[in-house]
Image 1 (cartoon, one colour):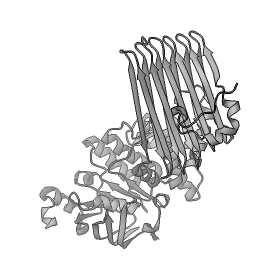
Image 2 (image 1 turned 180 degrees about the horizontal axis):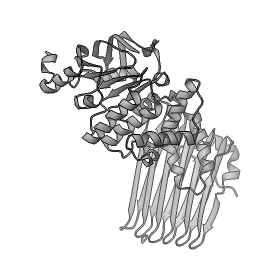
Image 3 (image 1 turned 135 degrees about the horizontal axis):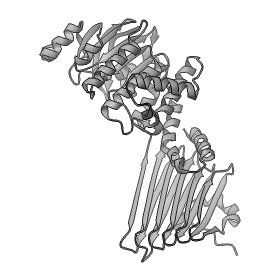
Image 4 (image 1 turned 90 degrees about the horizontal axis):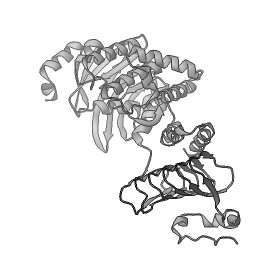
Length: 247
Length: 245
């Protein structure tokens, strides 16, 4: 579903990704772990097309399309979702308006009918309550005044509304307490653990992986995948740290 | 007798498009006047028209505890000027909420003089400018607090968003205070759209133009929330923003 081959990328002329190769087949969840500065977030941004993240070599294809040739909004319409490590505040625009316009833009691009205001509000309310978020919060400006945990939960509500084919989740677990972690883990399973869907879960900690059992775990060090395994690898890292891996 | 034609040497006309104003001066030379008696209140919404040059000049006298609130959209294709001079007697309250939305080579300006004459007066001015191309958007606002006008409370908040390198914003809040127990606040900022906000919106599926329009809407549209009947100005501003984005 997602095929990354020998991907190289620079940020501000500094090489960050140094040949990442990775294949996530449909129906699988892959986790990427790695120390600070290993390139995890850069990989997420390159896959979603953030300006300033310059691909210098390699390729990435998504459902057979050249992902790197697409604009960020085209990637979204094709079914790619990025869960932000630091969700962005947008003053003056309510979550409802933001998400309804976004979803309808995606639907237009795919040739699907737009959702009416009523249909959208029902969908959004449903997804919010499944993730334990007060739907009144959707009337507030995007992420303004939200706590760190609320922002992360709201990212998952967005994912539930967009129902993407593939999600790249960048440290969705950071800033969550234990209960929120469980709710978010269940959300990922409910929304994305389906045939034909895939997830790339970027995390520092093994804790979330106990809720969302990944099919594969990869360790990224210095912009390269140095080791792959199953969830046992994550547990080992949790016990022993990255030190040896980086050596 | 017509008032003399202004020059750029006069501070309140410094950024005006006098060339565009010239042929029409006679019709705007004499400001309109409006007087509100004690305790009266008024709310006005000023929409832009399709005219190349749009000028409103008004002098408002607010009696004791009178209240005036103006919502204004300044969006002339060539030259737009909203000029308001207000005097406030004891307990009077004045609020101006305005937007300059300028495209191309237009000049749009909001020029105010608010005179706090009595005790316990209050004024609020909020202006947002969105400018693309080589558009110029200005706010020149003078607040005068007279001797004896204690407990005056004045606020000016001015923000401008420049969408292109050639666009220019002038923000000049000015205070002249002759009383010692007053609250006068002012803030001014000029900025550009935040690239991370744009990317966030695009990553959710909005194309770049729609993402820009949405962020601009967030920047401007909150202005009209307090209006009693905001639909028309909301729609007009939204349309203007989409043209600017």
